[in-house]
Figure 1 (cartoon, helix red, strand yellow):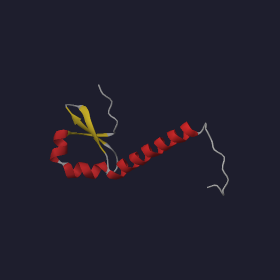
Figure 2: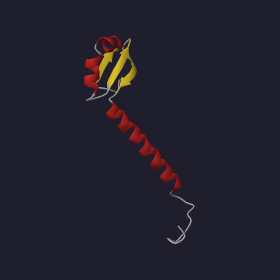
Figure 3: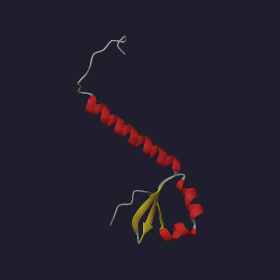
Figure 4: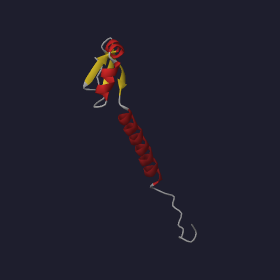
Length: 81
């Protein structure tokens, strides 16, 4: 059995029938969309999605910082900038 990474789930059929209600629920937490009792997709609010994108960008920046933290370094003065 596959792990469902959400506290709330809805079937594809239920999603089709009650889209407005499901969308109202998704504002609070992600929803797993199930097909034949297996997760097919996750529905998240726009706010959550934007937070995920920001987190990914921060992780990418962290990786670049860690890669460059060992040098090489170039010494310059403020006047040279």
